Length: 179
Ligand SMILES: CC(C)(COP(=O)(O)OP(=O)(O)OC[C@H]1O[C@@H](n2cnc3c(N)ncnc32)[C@H](O)[C@@H]1OP(=O)(O)O)[C@@H](O)C(=O)NCCC(=O)NCCS
Image: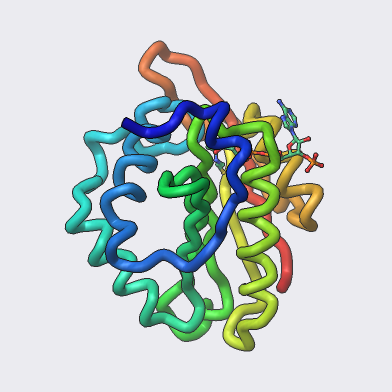
């Protein structure tokens, strides 16, 4: 049984690059966050969340100099993942898309900030990369605060770009920064 979140909070957050054995816990965290159906567009049944697919994705990203996946661990438990997914076409290969997720019981305690700082420091050391971009729901105040604090600026506001099952329309923002 995993330790209670209170116990986990006393453990140091270790951040490192993801490797193949992380595929299963990354898949579980991704499935849990997508199941919230609030922060990301994909619902869990719309993407392949199998550890096998995740392992292939991690291996593929690991081979690209403009891409990296970082995981955050408290003890043995994976509590956060940050993807930097570099573009593959030559004229946009200086860009990567950032995606960040923290386990629900670990949010609001600095994990996301530390993951982002780590990913940015890595990106700044990659000569291939000079731009990071992301999209975020316009009502995701915590994520927007975090991204703005780390130099991301709003490049677009897409009104009504997301249609929820109950008919509600939501906006999302396009944000980016140089590295
Ligand atoms: C967004 C997310 C990655 C942030 O990680 P986190 O660990 O919860 O965030 P942190 O505790 O590091 O806080 C980040 C900043 O947001 C601020 N913040 C915290 N709660 C907030 C809130 N409710 N509203 C506005 N800002 C808030 C914090 O003060 C902090 O700023 P600081 O570093 O200047 O103090 C995390 O909450 C998450 O995974 N959410 C669900 C998935 C998601 O939204 N991912 C991003 C999609 S683009």
